[in-house]
Amino acid sequence: MIRGKQHIKRLLATYYWRGVPVMAKQMAKQFNLNPKYAPYAKQLADCQKWGNPPMVIFVCVGGDAFRSAQNYNKDRDYAAMVLLPGQEPSSLKWPVKGCPVVVAWDGNAPAKLIIELVKCLLRALAISVTVWPTWEDFSTPIGFFDKTQQPIKFINSREIIRTYYPKAVQS
Image (cartoon, rainbow, N blue to C red):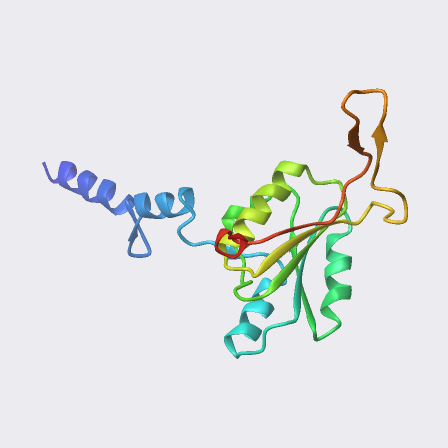
């Protein structure tokens, strides 16, 4: 009988870890109730907390993201963060409130990830989000007119720089 009570106590004790129920910890992890900052975002959050926001925030995505972010962070007018490969943008905190954001996209990341990143940055109250495809040569024409089709259609031949605004600003 005593063995049974000790067994139940031991089972109940496994549901608590450091005073927090394990189920609650698993739920917090599953629903991302405790998000973490992206690389270099903590320094940006500290600057904003003290009322010193940068002029432009860069979010570097792709192969050379850390080196690009380090170069942008050398200038005090800019701040840069990194989205790591395989990381979901919605699982991170983005301290971009009241600042314009430029996403430096090198083409290695899929377009769906960039779209999700833009949505997360706008939800984090960025003034605007500009997607800059850094692999494109902007001295070439953006496209051409296909005269073989009727009516004549314009065909895009490369990516362009696009700026997105929150819905309240668009109207």
